[in-house]
Length: 151
Image 1 (cartoon, helix red, strand yellow):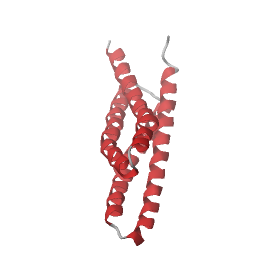
Image 2 (cartoon, rainbow, N blue to C red):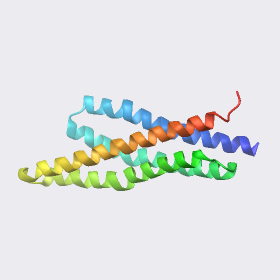
Image 3 (cartoon, rainbow, N blue to C red):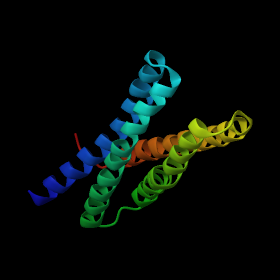
Image 4 (cartoon, rainbow, N blue to C red):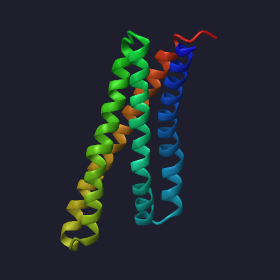
């Protein structure tokens, strides 16, 4: 019974984490940027990001606890590590820096805007790559988990 509960929490956390990435990246963000003007869309996405990353942090902790309770996890540790490092870097380092750059862009003279925009685009590119790494590591972890589930 306890083992089933641990596995349930593990799988629910993992698919919630992966699902949030897929839903935000392929459905929410494209629609928001299609419907709203770029600046407003950026504001909306900026409001969503803290909650988006919180899903990763909470899910990551729950997945960690389940892995610890289930014993040896082998390659699952590697996949989980990539997910956590990617989520933490994007949420705690890249996103705050991008938010600061966005604020600076609003108040900066025209001569500085190009430099700030290039820096923002570089951060955005890094964020997209980290998000992709987290997604693929999550799918890998799900695959590793599915191998052990009898049907």
